[in-house]
Image 1 (tube, rainbow, N blue to C red):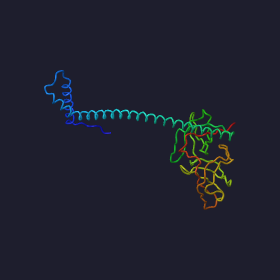
Image 2: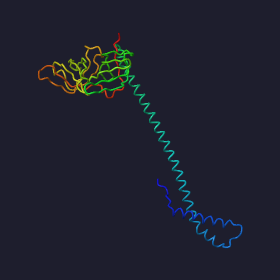
Image 3: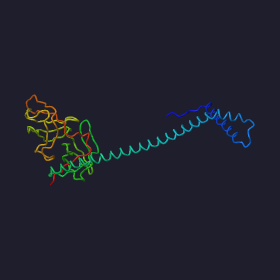
Image 4: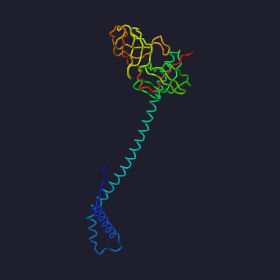
Length: 271
């Protein structure tokens, strides 16, 4: 909003106008009759419309300015209230999300009573060129041991390879050094899952290529003790047939995206 910008000539004109009005008013209020009774009356009649117009303009401008100040204050207050409501909404959404995750963990625990569940926060994501690993917030003081399986409600994450007092490091299913006994759910073909790249795993040592096809679900086998039997590992993206007739492989997309992990479940076998 642009306001009136008065230059020197306008200021001088307004000041002169009010001076003349003051003189007229003083003459009209004089106790003795003026020596020139016609001139003040004539000037008053001539200047009165302009005076009224200027007074109305000044009053209107003043009211508009005060209204703008009030509107600006209300807008500022509304912005503050909106920011407060947004912050409260984010907190409520985070609480709702956490409650949902806790319910999923509780259901998993009921479905796999042979394991103790330790929920840990992901504190670092060490996605290097050669190895893909995560650091979590629980360690030996919490009962975490090497080769403990790590999962989420969506599937296998990896397993623990290094343990400190209050932290642990785990390899992801995409790491080339990992090795998990797995089964193709549809055909029951057996193989080993190891890492291929930061977003893919490799299912290898499959005897027959007809045992697998794109879209097949790969799950944990019953030959290992780190994970629940039949737990999702990933889905086959494409099959690679060996030219030698044995040792066929398949590219697998993991069930869990490590970039989106905030917390994981470490599995401890009950003794």
